[in-house]
Image (cartoon, rainbow, N blue to C red; front, side, top):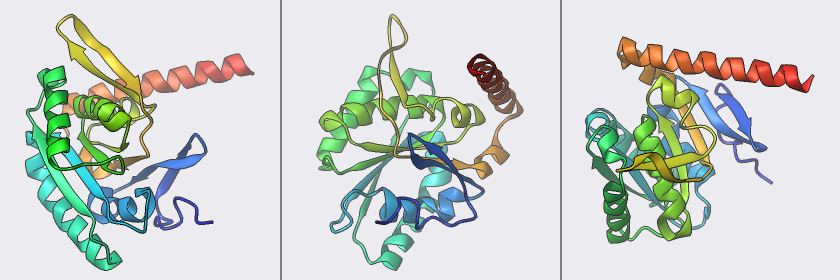
Length: 221
């Protein structure tokens, strides 16, 4: 039997979650690894073509969608498949993490004839990751999703653990679900363009997580 990560380059750092090497860490994953890995390892039915739905915000989309489209087309040619990539962009910011945006994405996916076998790609920070994870958990009672966090905070927090949520007028993250991603791609190159404030926010979360892990270890021993 082929292990889910057999076709992944051995140079990658792989972190297991729930018995599978779900987290892949390296530099330049977005261009060199993600498209081929999605087709070879994440796609459920290798014998038929699949649809991949990439959702991000307009700030990130203009920077990273064109190069991924090229990477995806190259991968399908090399692997001899006819898989399809469709993309959708939302306005940036917390205001997009709403029921209105979720409904718009649901409608867009239905219009694009996305099925139960569709794989969603959440490219962005915590807002995109939380919301697209929730969309994936609810569209057709659940479709597979992969997380591609683009901020340090989302790399160590929102993309990991399967926590998804959207905001309501009465509070943040009041509607959500636990929906574990099939893959989490940690591309360290994204960190090169982060503003200093974003790096500081992310490092604060790193310290918090490290402290929690240390405390848990002490309690267990």
